[in-house]
Length: 135
Image 1: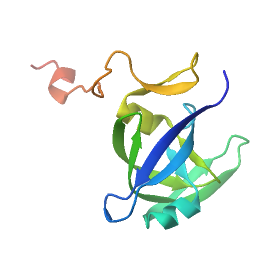
Image 2: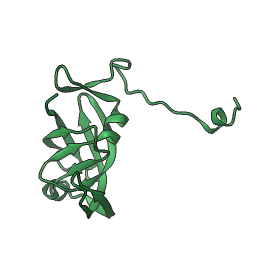
Image 3: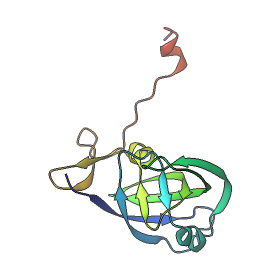
């Protein structure tokens, strides 16, 4: 399977007067978070919430800014997430993909709504009562 890219829009829900930023994101199901370059964080005037420690593929550990919130729009769906400021391109990880109920179609090399819930995102949620054996 080759690389899968997706056309996305990023916006700052705290500053709705700012225009959304269109970007091509690399879809990476092996990564958890949304990663954005510093320039995107500056353009959207995102506030740094904290520092997060990350481990790169080659094993190097470093601290990067964690910013947000961001609204991510892709394939007719959206979510609100925080982002790690790292790299020179937008990387869309598993957390926002799960939130939007999107899956990678390897045959078409594209991102699509889960075929089991094509019209509205679905989430599996189990309440505490169900876990404790109560109705």
